[in-house]
Image 1: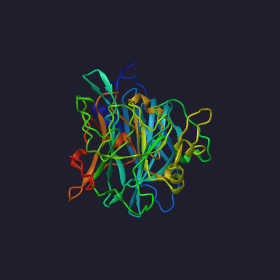
Image 2 (image 1 turned 180 degrees about the horizontal axis):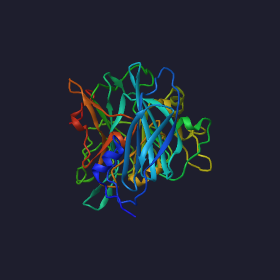
Image 3 (image 1 turned 30 degrees about the horizontal axis):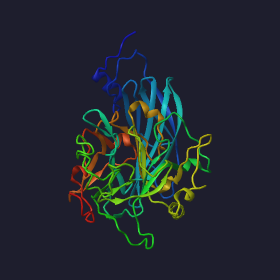
Image 4 (image 1 turned 135 degrees about the horizontal axis):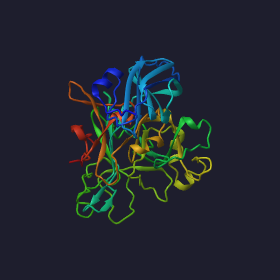
Length: 419
């Protein structure tokens, strides 16, 4: 049989606006087509997209096919090399001054026969005003040997044109805590409408007077949430570490070792955890993160004199497992980012496509690398707007060196200790 050697001109003529990247040698077979039956969840006063972007990725063979098609209940994709694919369909619409992002995906799909039809559900979410801008999660090494993970940080950015208030904002990592072939079925009604968290931390707020806002974030400003808001480059920690987090606004402070000190940053509130103590030890293999404002009922549950008693009966477990998780309705979630060890884990996605249709990764552990959002545009006054399509595979880039407030974004005026 003939072999395909990736002749660029032939491919360009065959697939028009679609594109294959880095196609490996495969046996010559006829290209096939497939249909996607789009089941679009209706949203009041939110118009459907005019077009869909369809993307097929075969990670084993390094094949990518991208196509833009008119929106409709049934869409067709042609010129597919048979194989196993991850399929994502996305679109956008505008209403009431907001951008709504529609996403749906299918993982680990066999496309082997011509004319197959597959169903795909899509739903819309607002593009968030506050976004996760940069995440450094994989850790570093000391003297090239000893592993070090205390330098993890998360950057939140005001991607809108109006001031946002961070008081009471929560950040947490979802379950499963690492990518897994296990699919949880949660013991609660309408379980598909919720995200489930292993750990939740909250930015402080004035409980007596919630209208008293302590932490405004202006357009184009960001804040850093550090696991430990210290200069990690100092000799007692890891002089080979790539980051100094002493200017971070917030930290998840827990005095668990002699090396940990209470730094200048504001201490986050430990709102929920399932570990033996309220530490934020998120896997260096890549967690799944989200930010949200809790509803009043959740706030009542969060802060009782005894945290252990506070969550008696207030958490949920997956059927057949003893794991505990806090359920948060997806309508409350502002932004979510799924991180993985590498592309081989893409079939084990944890985050619903409504929140994040893709995932991103740095490709290993203790590499000293981060992921950060791509710049979408810069306004005439110099404010950066970052890409936010609710698809981390599209929205993020990998950085060899993590950076606090990359691209020169602003620091809030109330942070008087930042360098």
